[in-house]
Amino acid sequence: DVKVTQSSRYLVKRTGEKVFLECVQDMDHENMFWYRQDPGLGLRLIYFSYDVKMKEKGDIPEGYSVSREKKERFSLILESASTNQTSMYLCASRTGLAGVSGELFFGEGSRLTVL
Amino acid sequence: GEDVEQSLFLSVREGDSSVINCTYTDSSSTYLYWYKQEPGAGLQLLTYIFSNMDMKQDQRLTVLLNKKDKHLSLRIADTQTGDSAIYFCAEMKTSYDKVIFGPGTSLSVIP
Image (cartoon, rainbow over all chains, first blue to last red):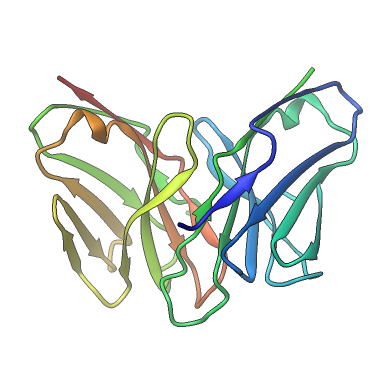
């Protein structure tokens, strides 16, 4: 069974703290994504990665960075957390093979609260 | 517009049909998707349609695509309480590009 695992389901951090959100997939997928989910706004793409050591900015990259040192792991970093980064963060992966449906496989999410 | 649009809420009675509508942004989008999110969980792909199709049926689910109006709909026949969830419409704009999501429609099924 395919699996995307986000290490932390719930986090509470203080303004200014550095935050790491980890995501691991066991499907040997090339592409990985970080979204944030806010009520009424749906999912907004923060960063994505087509392969190891590659990263691309999504629609809302400000205040975030990412790291993809290994194929199975994609980390989201908040260098200095702010209250407007309180949100649900969703990691997803998909195969890099062209000609398929492009289905995204999601983790269960990490709910971050910044005080 | 630049956004994928959906109504935010829908309420139906158990046993009725549900129809969730979506307007997407790009007439050249290759794949269009419906994802389902149950409480406390991530999203799961429910069904998808390739842009050269008008309709796709999968058991209780029917997807209709109107490319001229950039309109996508999901019909759930015989809606059950277990169908209560948030349903997201999404598009993949070009071949194997990033996927853009709508705001999600929260479906409530009344017993």
